[in-house]
Amino acid sequence: MSYPFQIRSLDEYRSVYEQSIKEPKTFWASVAAHFLWRKKWDKVLEWNFKQPDIQWFVNGKLNITENCIDRHLKDKGDQPAIIWEPNNPDEEKRVLTYNDLYFHVNRFANVLRNNGVKKGDRVCIYMGMVPELAIAILACARIGAIHSVIFGGFSAHSITDRLQDAKVEFVITCDGAYRGNKDIPLKNIIDDSLELCPFVKRVIVLERTRTPVSMIKGRDVWWADEIEKAEQNGNPELPAEEMDAGDTLFILYTSGSTGKPKGVVHTCAGYMVYTTYSFVNVFQYQPGDVFFCTADIGWITGHSYIVYGPLCAGATSLMFEGIPTWPDAGRFWDIIDKHKVNVFYTAPTAIRSLMAQGLPPLAGKDLSSLKVLGTVGEPINEEAWHWYDEHIGKKKCPIVDTWWQTETGGIMISNLAGITPAKAGYATLPLPGIQAMLVDEKGNEIHGNDVSGNLCIRFPWPSIIRTTYGDHERCRINYFATYPDLYFTGDGCLRDADGNYRITGRVDDVLNVSGHRIGTAEVENAINMHTGVIESAVVGYPHDLKGQGIYAYVIFDNTLHNHDLTRKDIAATVSRIIGPIAKPDKIQFVNGLPKTRSGKIMRRILRKIAEGETNNLGDTTTLLDPAVVIEIKEGKIN
Image (cartoon, rainbow, N blue to C red; front, side):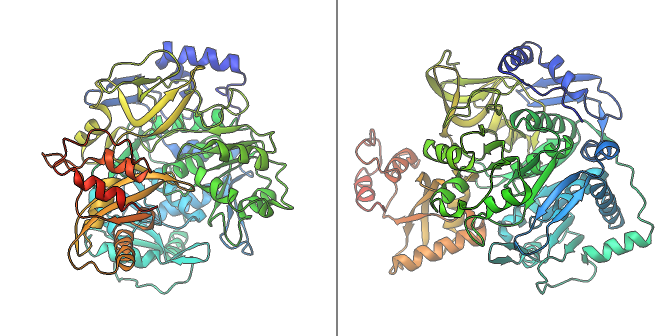
């Protein structure tokens, strides 16, 4: 497969970008024409941001798995589609060619059908990073079921929230998962979550860790047994379900500024077109290259750049089960050396933690196959960027610093590797079709360069969020109501003298911890469930490894005696309710919180104190009790 929409020079980027802004419908129609359609669309785009109501490729018919798999079989059937590197380096790798993937996806699609899964049903997938996770995702898409993957680090309570919100009737999981030197008991966690989800009809369990698990008669079945049944029935090839361009492909939950996670909905056609287009262009992918994205498929990065984008492009995608520091801090470099990786895409948090290990883990590792490096999840600081450039890329690999969100579906602002200029700490320029702009607090556009403001997008792109599952009004309020007729990203941003964009952080009550978005309200709700807690307030603060850490101010009742033990108890409560990713890094016990006379907590003040800026807190005279601020400053945890 060639990529006729791949940009190959800076001049071409400029002309294509100009065309994409002047005639966006014509531009995206020309890109979409290179995919496999059952029926071409009647209209490229219908939209308004007020509702919001956005429809791409209206009345087009397709199935995304025919674009991910079927169309590659003739020319690339024997090419690796997925290379799987297990957690334990001594365990055998697995390679699935496109022919293999076709076979396995068809077979598991039959398993789903045999277990009653139909088009439009919601299927929760809670698995470790094994090839069967990708197979399950694609099998759902093949029969038109809506998959909702949940990251393996979430607790039973968090899973219950998601299952109830999406009204999930089918769950696919593993007995357990390996992650470094830990075994995660996935099935046991699912069992706990299902106590409040009697509507779940079937749980399909893959054996991975041989962990003893409870299997409930009539509900729980083994993956291997169901495969055997499908094969006894002849395992016929399953024609892919015809889907409308606007049908839901998946729901992926993300934290918002309120306590309840929201289900971001992406649709079949627009998501397919944009993830493939952005994958090919940002990474300048060449046929035959090995692409290694280190994200978990439980996050949008794994959906878009381990599964759908690479496979639609006929690429070879490397999937890794483990963590970068086990069995030692050279694991990523071992994998790059072993599999001759050409494109490496990881998070700034991982880069910073590996940088802290020094250069010994790099000794003897051949990284000469690398052509492109990428970062994702949060802005990368300049020191880490230069370390990455010098020691991993040997100053010969362009670094793409990609900005995007769960809601955007794909990369929105980034340099194109080796084509458009990179700048340390900057996402740089928007991709073709992305009309980025800065606005002030009142929504007035900020023109020119060397300016800063709130980042918005003024025109839809194919993989834009369509709704939040079951609550369209929440989608409107969160993304389209702050500034009329604009998509508001929630991020602050500056634009330098050359027009490059640099993301400066969230401007709403959402934290970005190691690239994972966590709502402050969600963490506060979990802290407040701990016995003895009267009230809490959570803010972010700069963290050397995570980018942003979680700082919690907690008012406790008179039973507080052992501060350290109580901090651990609160952290354990948050871990149980949300998951370990949301545990506060610092917990300061206080007698009061800075509130206005109307009772609003002044997070601005708490954020500045957590950041160490204790002298310039602004006007505190409007507070109900200004003395509270002095006490909090004096008790700050360093």
